[in-house]
Image 1: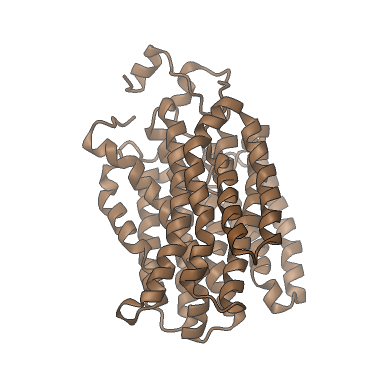
Image 2: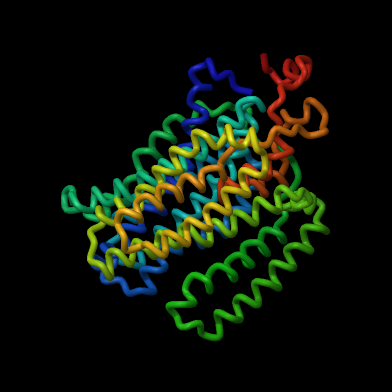
Length: 432
């Protein structure tokens, strides 16, 4: 454990949360910049789709293997590697003279993000004592809300101001100062965050996971614009077969990437289901709304950003009470949040052309979403006192890779208790 009173200890959480910030900003800023990119580089609808979705494609493909690499070679090393790749790709994307170079830059940026993402929660669990983890997860959720606010808002401002004639390129560079600062402060991450587990990398599982994810995500990304040709359906069918083979290989592998026991906990399964529903709805809706307002309604990037801003403001404000609600009502908080999000989302869609109602409902929608980042329930696990201080296993790292704060909340309902360990166990772990 790292002493927060030390100079290095004070920087651990800001450094790792900077990774969360740049990941989300790089996605949300493109929601207001994509039409300017299309006009400037002469990109067609399919190419614009790849600029947006190429990042997600490589991000998804690299997550599982990156989690295992963090266990094998060290969380700090992989976090720094991912941040360096991400920041370098952001600079390259901003300088791209052709749309295909921009697409290539976004693909590389997604790889960097996928390398970095699993290490963030692993570092938090390894460094922070159990009593501070709920607060760290609340800070995680607040960082996501702040990034959702900063991305489109600052991106819209930069596109409107057009500093040095950069336009959308200035918006692409938003994450670079934060990334460079994180790299400069990365030595503050404890040196204990080196490789913790031996064993070989499951090469068969890695190949199957990469292939299966690519076969699944690629047709979903470009299929609509391509008119759903036969190859997209063949790719989806192949994805099912390859991912089934991956599941079988993980049951038989001596050192699997994702241990089958990782999904045995119902809380984890429910959390991942909520992640799927949330990310299939809210981000896609904000993207389509942004493109509609700019393309069909003729709004400026700034006007579009201001329309989406209340959602992020509500999420940021709600994150302050989400931790309290989670402790008070437990899992019912997450269930109520999901129901409220569904109801308010329907109301937002029904009143999308009413400015006054739209702003209020976006604010409420963000507030309703915020409990997905709240702390674990009050119930503690029936586990050994010292078990909570152990570093996360491969199965936990793979399960808890960053998808949404809902998964973090649900999957940690048993793994991260709020009770302090007995003094003997605390002293063995270096705690006071």
